[in-house]
Length: 90
Image (cartoon, rainbow, N blue to C red; front, side, top):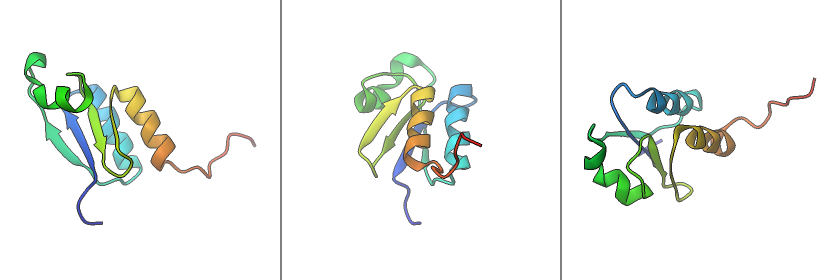
């Protein structure tokens, strides 16, 4: 693959951000990391993109999705890029 179409906005050593990183890595997805300002009030880039100043936040240009909140992002990545061949019934 060439350039990544997923951008992850994150903080250094943020456990919620690392949860998203683990999911991106699990699905072998290429992504760009953009580290944001540690001070909540200075996160104007994230605010312009997602309407919130919270991280993690992702922009997926493949699908046009922009979202924040780690649980929502992980669920989105699983739904969009996850392996759908695994079943729950034995």
